[in-house]
Image (cartoon, helix red, strand yellow):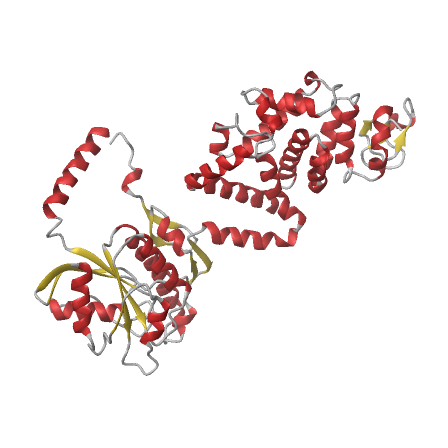
Length: 288
Length: 213
């Protein structure tokens, strides 16, 4: 079954002419090619549609003869199935799995421009602000993180992309060479750069590839798993970083700690939710 | 900016040294809404300067902007202290205009009062951050002191290392329990008083002179 319709999952023999004018069952015109060597491991996974293809992707890559397109397809198909990406992270190909995970979650954001995208952005912004504000706390975490570094990552060189690629390559089978992975690697590193915090990028040499993205991916996953909980999540986040929440005009909830800690001072509230703030002296431009 | 900042810093160091002895301490009167902060501020100001600080009301959030009375000289037991009193808006975590509707207020006015009260809380918290040298924390002794606001504010004040005097106000009310407030904040001295009736003000002034002198 080397060719498979990506839409309905119907399989065609290699060299079959049936599929030349589209899938006779569903009319779909996208097919994936699955070589025989990959089929042994991946056969059971291909039964369903996209949901289980995460493991198929890993299996195909491990098989080594898969064309470059295969991992991309499986990454794309994973967009709705992050839990399975997480599950595959424990299969031994940790770094590649987590990269696929982060790129998958990126795809997810692009696919769903509505509430999900906003929530993901909110979470990301919040995490970023949090890490900037709690400078000391972050340093403590860094120390903790260093001790939990995977030996795998610390063994390999110092520059950022190189150790990841070699780690990735060694985690996979020997058959797949680095040259075969440019798309996947560059995409993953872009996703990683985007997801790292301001501080994260400055010390990525010490940060194992798997440390940041899974954290990020996990946060974005949460609303996906329990979509009804999204509202609660947003409310919880609001309560954590807003100093004044306007429930409706004339009804306010105040976060006293936040009001106390913020340097600028809210001098007037407006009905549309805008604040007028007094800019503290410390914000003056240096050239004055 | 470096030179300018250095110059500014050295000037402020010199002026600090020159005036630190005479500079009146700025004492913030803090507490939840309707605890009697303005009544106390007016009582102190009238006793020592003859003027009032601001209007008092039984409707919560009457004070929605911090009001200051400067150079209040208090003399007790031969000890003289000069303080600036800052009467702050009542601190709370929730402001709802509906609570004002019970006090015969139009919705529009209630909503505006609510907004101003919220701004007032923000202002009070901001003053606490950088502008006060000591705190008089006023509580209504007829109500439960174990509230989130009280715990949080006392915690913040302690974290700022500010001297704090806790006043159990409204002892003229039947339900008043000073002991309940002592139990809530055993780490601080609690002085009972009725700012409205002027009961026990002598002890209050003696403690102000002792704490903030």
